[in-house]
Image (cartoon, rainbow, N blue to C red):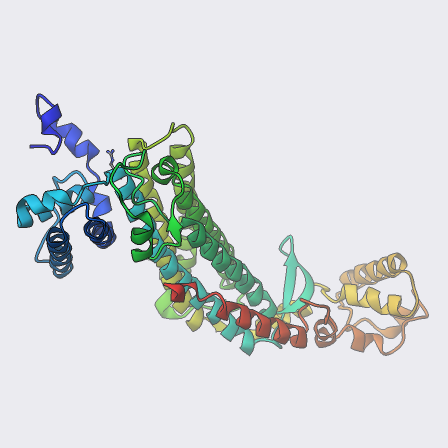
Amino acid sequence: MALWAGRFAKEVDETVNAFNSSIAFDARMYAQDIRGSIAHATMLGDCGIIEKPESEAIVQGLKDILADLNSGALAFDPHAEDIHMFVEAELTKRLGSTGKRLHTARSRNDQVALDIRLYLRDETWETARLVHQLAETLCDLAEQHKETIMPGYTHLQRAQPVTLAHHLLAYAQMLRRDLMRLRDTVERMNECPLGCGALAGTTYPIDRWQTARLLGFDKPVDNSLDGVSDRDFCVELCCALSLIMTHLSRFSEEIILWCSWEFRFVELDDAYATGSSIMPQKKNPDVTELIRGKTGRVDGDLMTLLSMLKGLPLAYNKDMQEDKEAIFDAIDNVKLCLRTFIPMLKTMRVNKENLRRAAAGGFINATDCADYLVKKGMPFRDAYKITGTLVAKCISEGLTLETLPLEAYRSLSELFTEDVYDAIRLEQCVGGRRSYGGPAPEAVAAQLDELRYELEQLRIWEDA
Ligand code: ARG
């Protein structure tokens, strides 16, 4: 018999029941649901809305249910409509009419709005812990590669020399901003909807500040309609997750290129690569490809949430039950990707010689050659043109700027002297780029120091 049987003349159709039910995916919020109910029952007792002994019995009953669910002694009922109904029914089974008092001054609408916030707050902190771990892994790797020269690219064409440290720290900086986004998301999520009721608050003398405090929120939501009907925090979190995936995906794409035989900049550990069922020579970067693929999936979750919300009149509508599978899918996949990516990166071998070799081809010191002339007084555009002519000459004669004879240089400008070879040495090209945020080892060391300091401030899960 359904909870609302009083109003209905017959039972709800079985297919509708199954269609309506969300327990298959909201059961995972059981600990948060019970935590919210404990706070609510405590408040009801303290405010004299229910008797103190009843409030205490309810709190104890909820704690017992939590313990039994944790141990597996109690199983979820797949026929329950949702986790909220399941816990309440179980409580009533155990406590009789006392259990029936728990839902006083509450609706499932404020209850579910609370549970998702509690659940996502925990999950956001856990995600932040993993993102932080990845950023630290990159910092450690960068520490070892401040002098490892590699080509920097634009349009995937070799452009100017950088170091592997500098390249890796670019990703670490993206992750730092990802952490800030997660921190900001929690900050806006951290208002308590409990007490908003179905949509219009309640006539009981509840204390919303008490429940907010008990549950670790900064304050109660200020508008009861808003508290039960927005899911902007899900969208915001999913957006932050999409960006994390975007960053992982771009990095993955580079690793896929880097471990191809065309590049051979890195080699994945055997434990983090896979073979082919037919081609015996293959070692495939499946992990990175799967991350790239899953990025589209998380972006899809974001689209699901935005589309679900856009036409909903205030306040609660059942459409909103669709928020959970989308945001859970996004969070599960981001955590999965991070947990796999971190050890893959830690065990990846870097082929410094090949990075250096790639940097030595492709004329990535051409800008430095032009700058050499500029430093001797020539306008940049003239210097640029002369260097272009030199590069063309090198290409037609199979030479590099390093092996081109001095006479060839001087035939285009008398400003060239023997020291041009020093100016276009890759170490010199990188080492000279000391501008703030540049790739010179000392600039990268400063960046690394600052980044490590900033990451220390972003251990947001420790606020829990
Ligand atoms: N399972 C529901 C959800 O996820 C809980 C809220 C149900 N409220 C209602 N008025 N039917 O949204």
